Length: 234
Image (cartoon, rainbow, N blue to C red):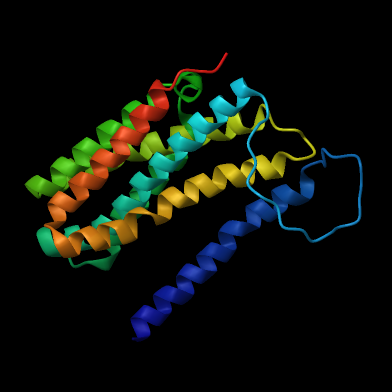
């Protein structure tokens, strides 16, 4: 109990420390909106761009990030039980490192990936689909190495999809209402994060876990491919 409490406190402090750079950036970043109004409280609905071409591009990016974060949610749901039950890895640090690897690779892809990967339509879907296929193979074959390779590929795809989606979202946004469009984008991302976990739980009660994850992986791949193949509106 004491160890768990210590880990929870450490995680909370780490989260607080990670917000410090964001707070600093918020303080030093110049304000882009010149028209000042008194703060008001209101309920805002999700919005999309008004122009057909911009709306189609935004919806393609939102669908891609939903699929990318679904991979993240599916992966996070699988790793602890996979390592413990299939590979008999009971070291909590090792389990945490494997989960954290996905997010570290996603961060590295956003920062260090070539510009053509970020701006292109196919780099993120290719990495996502390859990552899903490889770590699903690792699950079926009970291969830690294969699972880690899938983690690297999927993490790269998640980072690329998120970075490109942010750029696509900001292009057509009215500077005075940019937060509305970004909120819609993040709503799509977090929907992808949340959905796989209860879906996996429900499917796992009815069928084998491997088959359940395969069904979800196929759904994610189909969503990713559909977003990539969607033709831009003219």
